[in-house]
Length: 420
Figure 1 (cartoon, rainbow, N blue to C red):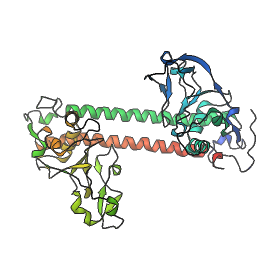
Figure 2: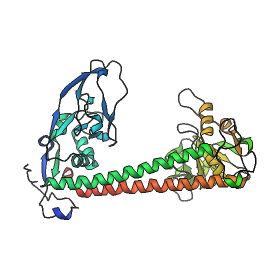
Figure 3: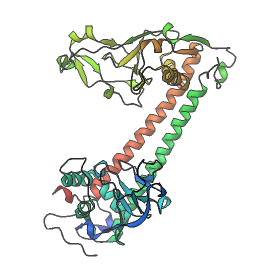
Figure 4: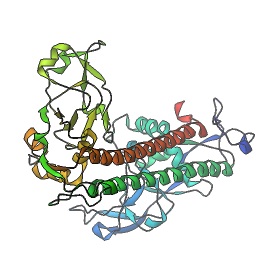
């Protein structure tokens, strides 16, 4: 396969495997020389076994849902190993290689498929297209930045990519990135197992509905007797945050400003509130609510019922509900995990108000029923679940670093012809 030389600049990746360092420059070629659209006519409507492409590089999957009024829609047969993308969502990284498990499945012309030439390695091509410097820039250039516009087949085929002079170098790059993907998948599987283990413990370390004792109890506490039943409002003060309005009039960049907590300041999977991105002036204090380290907060809408422990003093807006002045008889971390337990979450779902977006309120949280053992057993339960959370955090970090490592490799293993 001949590849025309790039007219300006050196088309060589920053990082190259030793055996290819003297193989010469890469060359630029338009995709229409490498891919050919496949148009094998298949079924119409719901008779087709459908596939679809998930967003953000999450692969090609079976499409099980049906669309009303689509009985006459024409589908086309797709084959394993073909490249497929979504005309509407190219800018959302909706493309992939069809796996063998979906060979013979079908899609509409809005998800066009392509046969790759024999000298183009599929994983190499997919990883090339995955890079933001390619799919985002090329896609935005094609549709003028208007994300609702479709990337038509002829437009996609007009894009150019860089190829090494030897097919073996494509394979080497593909194998390297594929091995990283395998590691990421394996580590993600470990993460999911840890999360499932935590779910199981949350279910067993707290009493189930109608019971006063948990199914699983640590040996040193098995003879301690029944737990005490109560309501959260009897052991704490539950208050709602407040929002000074308009908030822009109260924001400040001064160092002595008061912390102002927004939903976006907290990672959904986090346990603690550790920092805020904005501050408000002291005059906002009589229009808002300030919480202290050790207080718990919950969102009263959207992902309601998800607790966080504050490690800082901060003001909270009226989208938050705080649990403060918690009784000394209760361990803070025990209450945190109690709220996360399936029975508490079920209580919130069953009692949340609103036919559309459901909301929690102060009375619902005050009325949360729960059982608790002595303080030492509470601490033992909290310590067990906290150690598991640490493992989950460490595993998340490992996966994040692997993904960043892959991202860095992708930036260096491919030349950046799109930037010229």
